[in-house]
Length: 433
Ligand SMILES: *[C@@H]1O[C@H](CO)[C@@H](O)[C@H](O)[C@H]1NC(C)=O
Ligand SMILES: *[C@@H]1O[C@H](CO)[C@@H](O)[C@H](O)[C@H]1NC(C)=O
Ligand SMILES: *[C@@H]1O[C@H](CO)[C@@H](O)[C@H](O)[C@H]1NC(C)=O
Ligand SMILES: [Zn+2]
Ligand SMILES: [Zn+2]
Ligand SMILES: [Zn+2]
Image (cartoon, rainbow, N blue to C red; front, side, top):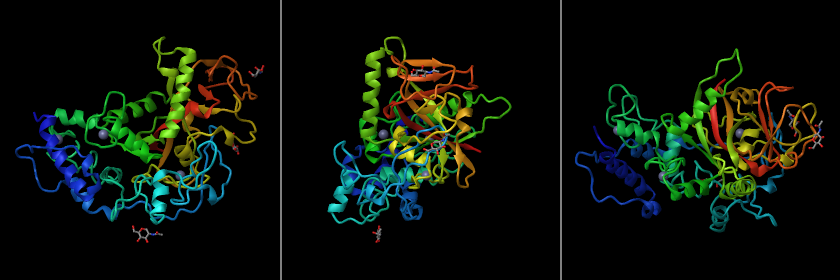
């Protein structure tokens, strides 16, 4: 049986091929003193794909409609139209950064820098649309180049041709018509870091360490495709399947899973809220997760092809609630004047039942697939309600959320939070419609 170790030098040699195309990144590469005997030295699949980088550019459509804010109700919300002036003066894609006191002309330091350097407005990476392109390349880094290739099915850990090991960098024939050359490569592919797609991830994290996690967040907001053989894919798809409870309907197969990467600012606001709820409720001591955090579904309106094959760029349409939520998370202030809905008032609605959230997932343009979001939600102390109360604008005193339980006027469960920072989109799941 071939061990992981014997394949690592190959992975690293591919990495170096890539790194040589992005020389600025070389100092960040791990060093390898020795190459395993027999390891191929020619350009690998990844390098081949990278040599054709310009053929898989993804950002050719013009960016016109600005978008800011996000959906707040369980179906769809059209955020109020905003003028182009609310968008970054460099990339014209992301909202200007607001530090709580003033709005800056740019969305990020990298855009401010790019503008100062006279870089053109299309100078951001075609994959993350966040960091500047590496000179002469469509992407900012080898890491984004690789992820664009994986996402297009052109290469990477799930893109090898049939009969070839699906582990990162491996091109050996598969064992016994499986997907891998060896058990250790199966394990490697199932647990690989979603950012570098090379090193094994750590425990419950999707990343191999702080560097990859920070690297991802620096490029956020964006989505990262989770390879089909990955443990995270299985966990998310299993939750979709086991929580499909509508009788008389069949659970549609999950086709793709993306990890949603928010910005560092957005994540730290969520974590602060979670710590405060934990401090009040002491959930960890009771054997629960910090802040009684749970994963809940949310279906919304999708106005673009995001999540279809190779489509990882958020659209800028204000009618696409999906992209609005992915950019800036949920926003209660966009709650509209509601008629006949919002049974538990002015909050953000999620469900533990995927088939219920499926009812709120709508495509407003043609696509063979539907989208649903799996979110992390700080439930804290949930107030169980079985009857509607449309006047709620906050959880009842002493509680952090409302748990609308099955029974009374409800056929399926709902969880309602009344604070933006109590929820963040975590995975985008694409399934057959
Ligand atoms: C976009 O970038 C390309 C090179 O990457 C350049 O040739 C083109 O002029 C740029 N377009 C704009 C509008 O800046
Ligand atoms: C959601 O809010 C929008 C306006 O903000 C409204 O037009 C729409 O009807 C609401 N949807 C539901 C189901 O309440
Ligand atoms: C709805 O909630 C508000 C605020 O907690 C409460 O004062 C009111 O009595 C509730 N109404 C019903 C019908 O339960
Ligand atoms: Zn292998
Ligand atoms: Zn990593
Ligand atoms: Zn969209």
